[in-house]
Image (cartoon, rainbow, N blue to C red; front, side, top):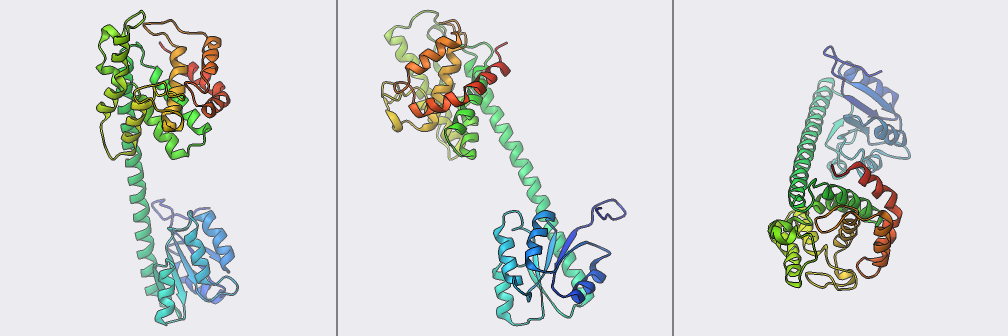
Length: 346
């Protein structure tokens, strides 16, 4: 059961690591009224408890058999789940070199034996307070960062939908294709950070439609060669709208806007890039975009059936689409269809 103070705030947890029962008894008497104490008699047990409990402070004896305090501290700092826990060494050693070794390993302080009760309480209070303050600051920063990321993504998604409204009345295409893009990116082996970044950037792929005249964008029939050249400009217009910025998200959004109409065989636009010259993120977006667009109503066409769409997609393997991304697409097709069901046009 968690020990609490009168105001029901949980007591800070301090772990004592010492092979001497006498030292442990002294520290219990000194700290037991203010802190919840956990005890380990050796370094191996200390590592196990620290990972499970995540104490606010570790009081760690230096001279222990087998795994001494220095090695225990080193392992604590190598473990991401325990690395930030402050460590205070307990020692009878007074040599400067020993203290420097401990500090180099990541310890924040030393308390020497025999213990002075007032000094022990003061130092433990100070280090626990500092640690809790740092943890709270970290939580607030992470919370604020998450809020900013969510706001940034929402703005980008809304801009993408605004462009999509030009030729798709619900604007849901960008929602669907961004989710499909994430599924494809994960299946293609992109790391989690890059996958999430692409999910956030992909709604901007057609933002350049804003610069295309309605008489061309909404034309119900076939385009003339000149009109098609104008349509192709939405890729470069989109890149210009997004602009240059140091943000990873903006950089990727610009790449996707510029390159999502390039084709694997080099017949795409605007640069006629071929194969792996095309950034993989743009290759992924290209497939997700075409798949959902074919299944959706557009001013110039009705929605295609799933059978017709799949026949076209497979016919374009190695021409429009990267063959390896096609393989990944087959794996996630059931999930892509669930995305379409979840985010229907209304």
